[in-house]
Length: 598
Image 1 (spheres, one colour):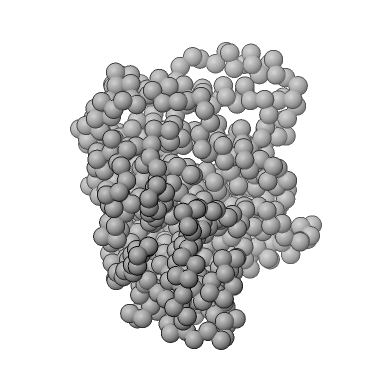
Image 2 (image 1 turned 180 degrees about the vertical axis):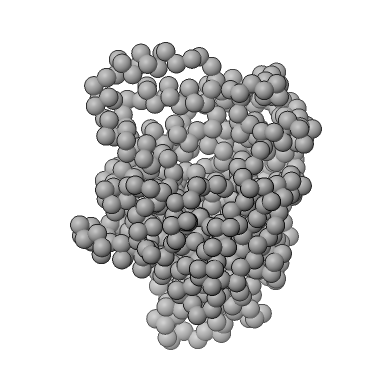
């Protein structure tokens, strides 16, 4: 099992077993590089054993409160274990960081499995009749040989709808994800789950009328978050795209340390993709040691198979992260900070403003049901994603986030999934169920923050964070995301809409750190990795995609003739068929074939 995830920890391995449990660990050495800090690690009393993936950034603060504990290492793992031994399972409330860990209590004969609040680090498990398996990646559980390699058909509707597998399911039948912000205890054949943190539940006791004070506090929270994530015994670099979020992270790195920031940017000779000029501008402003790594768009084609092989769970995104992470790791960096998460927290996507606008036009929904249904009936009939989204919006009975978020995030419509597969499209997906379950919890949040909350348990947790983890760790690179600091998130979620509403992209965030960013960065046109996949799938990738489509057409959950016809329409240039819809089938087909899934 540990051999399957060697890429996550190439520096050391370790094992422990007794008559009831076996623990294995792969180590990526970042804090306390000595062999004494290898895992599994036992506490001073010999009662507790731990294996741990991630980082606890405030471990030095916690260590000071454990003055009577006889520490033998200088790392965060032993602090985490000592805190558990001292204060028990509730000690998790002290930890600020990203983590998934297991603690084995030899005396009670109980295992405790924890996952961090935001779901940055993954944790999967399989509860069989006679055994319980867990790991940081699905492939390790499959590597045990104890779990049948069978696709979870009940979870596929969610995958085709939202491009990833949401909690609690996974691609494999029987393998589940541990919910973010929770832990489970396994003892005497029973599994008990405890939720120790809920998104948006902790409202700060703050007067948000004092705008200057609010901005000052947000700035302090961002700086503290970045400063915590610089704790390392190996060099720490940063992704620098030249956009607002990554530029702020680098600026805060410069403020928080006397050392010059070390930054990396991927450059392209093609102007429509290249952002290196902006990155160089930011690097110069903060006196960074900057490296520009030149790549050609074709590199993404050449690395495609490697990137797909790195996928522990199928995802339509992630290839960009794989290529960039690999290039940075080859440049000698083990830890890198990323600006990912700024859009989700500070209303950086179009849907934030659209959701706010819809609520301002609430009268249309409350008083014009007949008019909306008539407009819906006039839309063209077909499988166009845009038309399905408009029809769903016009037929909506209310403007709650649990109803509207899935409409805006959906890739394949229910109708198209029903057309191309035999899957159940009538029951709600796991994401839709989660949104409904959180409805009462979030209804008191400002409207923009309701979108942020939906993003966190939707696209962010199950696509963005999952891809960041699996694609960076494939190259043994640890990525840290300051904008996912839970102290920062808890505070910003309660900021009123009138403060956070963007008059230009992420204006509140920009003004909070002003005058840190030059105008050229703030008001630049957003680019990003918008490569011509549609063209590649018809040319360079045609044979590859055709093989995966043909393979899926033979699966019992796919209507082979319909999928083949849809693929042919795309190849002939039908603009109503989007490449992203078919790419979901291609990625799934490759993943199932590689993992010998039934």
